[in-house]
Image (cartoon, rainbow, N blue to C red):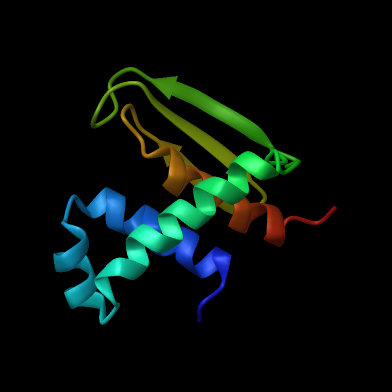
Length: 107
């Protein structure tokens, strides 16, 4: 698929992988230039339209766990979903997770 949602997830995955565009593209069967083109396109779109924040009926934030595996971990529950957020998390990936939860969430 060549839609913004798919490419947004690919770009986040690429950036989190730490790989070069050429390596990531070869591994996933993508044209190398596509990562740069879609990254720029998504940045322009984000600047043109302010991002709306999904409204989530978050059940609870369990706690901040000082002795978690990486320290400073936060656990958020939304219905039957539980998300652990550790220090140094990737904002783009968390944004994608929140978007999925918002789609699943009853209004």
